[in-house]
Length: 300
Image (cartoon, rainbow, N blue to C red; front, side, top):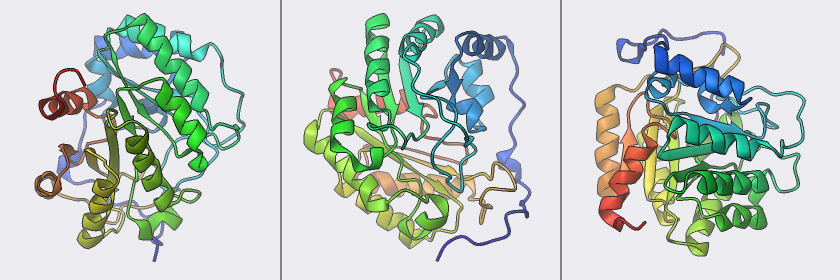
């Protein structure tokens, strides 16, 4: 069964989901730098509720390969439309922006590009290498699509040696037809397993949105599935409906419940977990990775 509620009915947000409008000198400085560099961020394109906080702290998640996606997921605010070929100068511009922002932990993600033979894997690899050349001390985390299950595309990204490889499972398998049409639950699990088989020194990370109608039993089983394929870092956040055309929120999860899920996930075996209403894939990514260092040592 999939989510089938009337999309035009948008539930009012509870008090714990109120956020101030992005403002401040640093926030505007980051926006100006990104505009000048002709770069996109998932913060802006996906209407992330943490944009103000992250920009004000001088951080951003770079969105490469354009701002239009080939898929039409029921939860995502990223646009769909004409697709341009990869911008060969984009990796260098991202690297310059990273250096200009003084970032220590960089998150690179992309729209899904099923139209490209490698799904955009080469652009990920070139971006990782450009950042490492410009800012050798920066850690690079990538949040990648499934590349339609291509092992060679995954190897292309891994050969560039990112510090963290993130691929979001997003939701429980029952809800995939409405939440992630075009994606396959088992294929996403296989991607995470392949990373660990190819190079276990690269930690894998994944995340779920809660509030789409999943049950506690389904969440628990999905966490078990992630652990079985070697996933060590986990994010759990509240799904928020970007517009009336997107899937509705079935339930707003209270902060205390997110805390209980964090405790349970740690007890199950995840090394580090970020869980809360505003948590997103790259939210406080640097802190999550630093906490992982406690388990794996300073040379990870």
